[in-house]
Length: 356
Image (cartoon, rainbow, N blue to C red; front, top):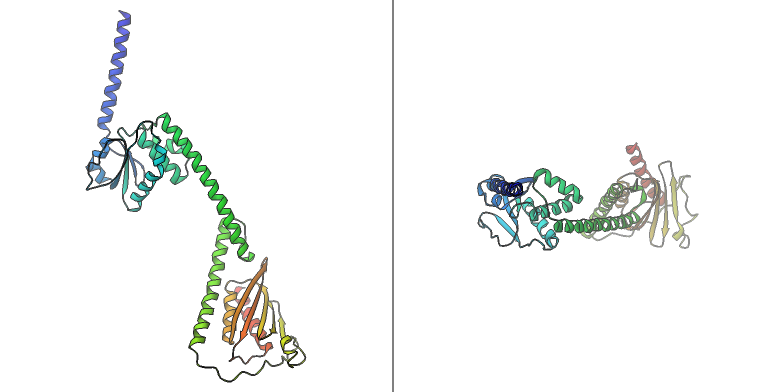
């Protein structure tokens, strides 16, 4: 009699559990909000059109076999035909893209299976891991806090663990490639643009360098356009005059043999400027402390003085920069070498005064 009573009690308890689960399933017709634009639920939630519209759900991701879209004219559907023991991780990227597409469109997405407990939970956990860099335990804990019945089966947990290892490997490879790219950028950028070795400083310095070089390019293109539109040149200009001030040095005469060595230099606390004839061109070197926009200012001065920049090299050490120009003498140029270096020197002095 006692054994019969015990068996009866066990059967009654099992019946109560089934009835409780049935009641819970019947009530489970509301999507659980996981984050902005992402909802998780059961098949009954996917059938609740009124609530779907109310929550601005525009996309429905079905992770179950043999469930056809219920409202194909009112929602965007994606169906993942999956079985209990299937390799669900092969669909993770596809599902993540669908969720992102829904968010980008300004709507929201419901991810559901039959009960909203295992398959659909697995997909949502995978999305959180990939999108937000969460660990498996963090993502699963977050989903359970929003939907307490969430409980992927052991097979799906194993696949999520494999997916976590894959994401870690991808992240390590991304960081390695980023470090390699940063090394290349740093090697191509003068060091005074980069104050520190962290990623933000390197990228910020590269952006500043590119902006300054863009200014140089615009200046040179403007010079080229003006030259193409200018009338035919007049007679050749007079040769450079011999500098007269004691602060500037040049060769003793202007004979044909010495013309190639003609030069002048002017030094000041602001900068050291040296100009020297090299064949039919002028080599101009400027050493100064770096000031933003300085290179564009120097090129502007050279263009105003009817010189054309043929080549520019920039090197630096800490806050000191060396600009080496090869410039072509324009036909309209009427300056001596002394006047050239003084003009460049003056432009740098004004920049230093402004910077201070």
